Length: 490
Ligand code: ADP
Ligand code: GLC
Image 1 (cartoon, protein in one colour):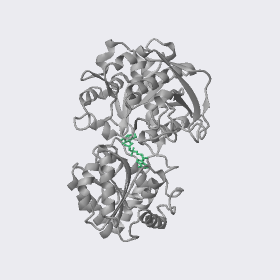
Image 2 (spheres, helix red, strand yellow):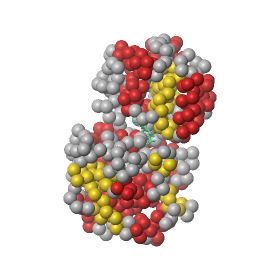
Image 3 (tube, rainbow, N blue to C red):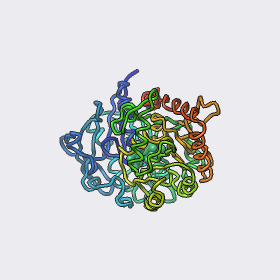
Image 4 (tube, rainbow, N blue to C red):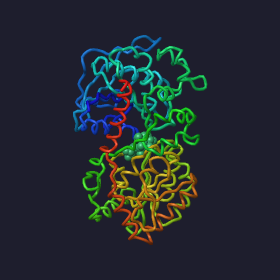
């Protein structure tokens, strides 16, 4: 098979800038595709926080002209670097006015009011950069609403451009809740012509993700279950009918994780490394974690970890209701997260009131995330929806049994407790209620106290599971070929 030219655009990429799992995916998938022999290039904005020196970014010669419809032509500088540990080029679009700010999308909880122009500018710059590089992509791979204008631009502004004669597009939906909804005047900045308005139109405004869904040659979500869910009103955020109608081009490809970063046997952030054969280090990690959170150092109590954005999606309201009942059990809970202010205050307050049972760190800390994965006995993810979720997969690797709501990727990656324990890797609940959450935590805690052999067998099952990028990259590769062949009329 001929090798492909793949251009991946995203608003965040590990290790340069990250707010969530999107960055993990775009930092890892390109390397796995490169290992399959493809010419993969990544493009992202050069935010203020992207450290040019640390990553040895070099400026490319000249400026990149970026047409912005009625706003006229604007200019970007481009920096070039590599995804660490690989030869995958990463291009950074720099524009002081749009990206020279501290936050990626917001500051102090308020979204920037020009996010529409910022990401239209970025998307258009991706197209222009591809031309400047004479890259001739077989596939442009867009991710989430920030780059969802790419398939639209490809099919409108660049239809007759020979540089994109055989270029197809893929849009990956990592999260359907955020769609890029803006005032319809954005059409004039997009510059694709009002005859295309209905393709992006929603309640008389512009919905960028909708446009991307319509124009992309294929759409993926980051788990199979989520691909099914977004065809329903419960998970579709208003786009369910459209997505259901276009389901012939919808695929679910599960994310992988980076086992070089997340392996208890090689983790430099944790108190003591361990593996499935010798779990003694895990007990030391638990001890260290209790110390970090100033909890009583007890080996005889189950410790439950939580890490993630404090956002509605993650089921924080269920947890806020459930927490009082959970704290009646003989357990300890540690939480690491940042996000909605009410939740930050609420959970900090509980930690203050129950210092012997509940530890809470508000903020973003990768080292602590590793320590929680390693030192906890169980990991709680009560998400209302979860397109894939990475933390439950990390948890499996660390023998930290996930307690999850059976939705999206959580359902696809966790096998429920079985009486024979030979297959189970975690504990699931289905109902999005705090009662179901409390009951299921109770069930897991009961298993920990009363069936230690069964619990340890489940830890072994969990630690033997692998969700690496090699398998997922093969699925993306097959889809890229399908898209490319389609564009070439084959
Ligand atoms: P989402 O992308 O919806 O936030 P994922 O589970 O896919 O959820 O990915 C979240 C990623 O962000 C994981 O790598 C997780 O460890 C990390 N993360 C989230 N919140 C924090 C935090 N407060 N501190 C450290 N890491 C965090
Ligand atoms: C989104 C989803 C999360 C997924 C991540 C990476 O942020 O909320 O479930 O794992 O994207 O695809």
